[in-house]
Image (cartoon, rainbow, N blue to C red):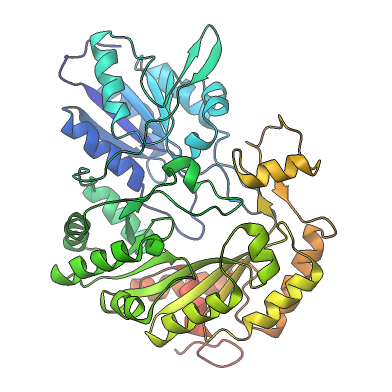
Length: 473
């Protein structure tokens, strides 16, 4: 590694996410880390694996970074039908970097934080950071620049005598005055042209205990809000950069109704005109908040409903029932927003009878589409992993890096898929197949005309036309 000044150095940040289904997602986590490094005095450049992977060798040779950071957002697509993974090329990427640079390689990202030891071992990288990196990564690079000990840093993943060691992550950082994420013009242009949207995070943490979910493991169980005015400032910058639509990536935007309302009010004061989407919990929503969300531009709601059967909802740890789902769905519909419900079919407690109950109950929903998946992806550290071990489905020390799925005893993935296909024949709300090429071509034409928003919203749009789904010319 070339000499580094004590005040900083050059760091090449690489977003490794290649997933484009249903659309490419701007690397917001990397953008926050980039801003933190710049504030700490480091010079940074980005390289995005989505559209410039061929430039890696040339960039390493021409810029000669002192450090290289790799961000892994996704482990896999969580779909039992495809089981596509996104970590298999890590070792090859690290070897390519080493063939052109002596810079230390540091892994991070939400995907890495779920499997830190296994991914450090698989990749051959020098270090990793588990959890939030905005504070730890600048400190790590500063210590390395000065030749100081790094092994007590929170969240650091490293090797000691050939064994991978994972330091406990830091306590959740205070997000007040978190530096505004960087948005390189080239990156903004690419993502707007390929997905029509950018994204924002207004808070971190999740207080809920869904049996399968990794959000509490990655972000902690305490909600940590960003100041609403700072969120509005960030949105104004996105709008000025050309964005017409954004998505809120919080685990659930209404985890704190007070925070959600405060962000909406800040957006209205800032005169943000973009439409947007978010994840909402279908519980605790009031008519007042629903109307405020709509006034602030919320157009598309994604409900993490998981099931329309009360027995299954209880097994999943959702702590709401279908009556509450129906009430919240009606509030969203009456406020003029479009909605979809994500379902996980075949998890704990699911039976053929509960599948039929979910279908019958879905007919009561006022509008929107239903997006079911088969089976429940098992991640380490979740209640689902403990249950799978207790039931003998999974060995206690089984690696989960390669996808493993829980399917309720008495059901099979094939049986569930067959029933879902039958449901979709009875109700066009149930979207169970991948979008056909003709539909994707139509969406692309609409986006070129200025339409924006998530892919499922176009299904919902089509449902307003004739039973054959024929769109207007």
